[in-house]
Length: 430
Ligand code: NAD
Image 1: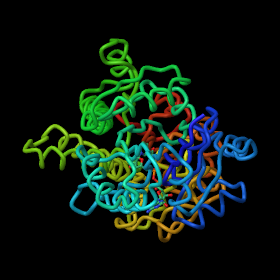
Image 2: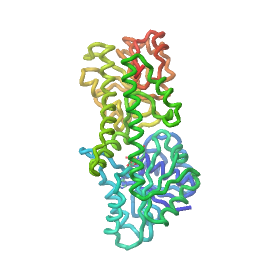
Image 3: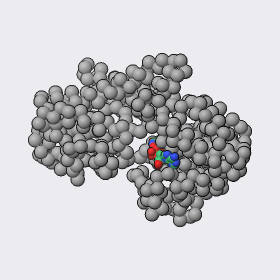
Image 4: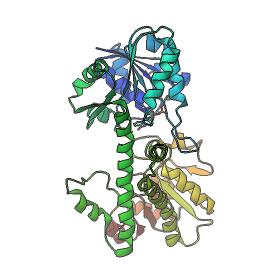
């Protein structure tokens, strides 16, 4: 059993904290958002993540997991300190590291013995060096400490599964001591552990996320060619994916990537490369393809509805992906705003994300199910591939729509079947 403090009780911090407690460690999650900590203390979850509430409840009850607003309390009671605060995008595109800096300073001031300070947030290469300098400067107790990087690869919506069954665990260290302690911590997961220096570990995270974004943009580029030549991108992807060197994953053509990680991490990586003196043109193209995909949806709406002004369009799905209520950088927001600029009235539904979407989107009629969205709409656009949408009563949907028009931004329906049902249907790349 190790004593651990996770600073930042967000999507990564809370899940990591709960899972590390589940593995038998004693974990304190510290967050300066008092509202969030109070919600957690009441046994509720600050966001939706399948399985998290039960896991948190079990570990709080077992005395292995607790919450605090005080970083000092967390640090004083722990040997290993994970930094899991946000690293959002600055207007310039770089990662904003002010939260990481603030937390590092507080850690330094609270040191009362040897600690390992671990970056779990996604940070630009060389951030470990900055944290080290800052802690040294502000460390009143003169306690020894190690810095480590342990990037997180979990996906929202499958976060617990991913934390407990990672493809690999990356540990970047400067000392054998830190490597030993962190390797022991993750040993129960029984997965490959890669121990590197800190810079390499930091870079693995940006290189991985950018590669996944690249894979999405690649298949979307292929989808655009498919539409021009009468090929089916889903079959092209299947045919490619059987090649083990390529793999089936992340070859779903659609509206493009969104969420709190890929857009900001790709942009940050371009900036990191720029600072290092390399023009990462390949990633700039990845971004351009992604933007193009969103614009294509508006073009498809125009091609099916002719004039958009005065029309009503129903949006199915607001979350950036299924099984989450997260709408950060969700394609839905961009698409809805673009449609509104064209004079379209919007009706929308999402199984989990509507509470988060309400304060962000204006003039949207939020509905209680997909059928209410369809009622009186001129077209439906599938933006998020929730399972609930895959099993819709499509004949009922057709009756409720003013015109039987569906734009399937995630290719969840079969084009031939939709045609048979009498829909004017457009998917992506087929
Ligand atoms: P989040 O916004 O959900 O959570 C961040 C938390 O940090 C918030 O609760 C916030 O209140 C807290 N915080 C900010 N400043 C603080 C301070 N000074 N003291 C204490 N707490 C503070 O963010 P997230 O999605 O969990 O992402 C965290 C990091 O992990 C980011 O770097 C992100 O890129 C990375 N990451 C995210 C995911 C993901 O799927 N969300 C996956 C892998 C990596």
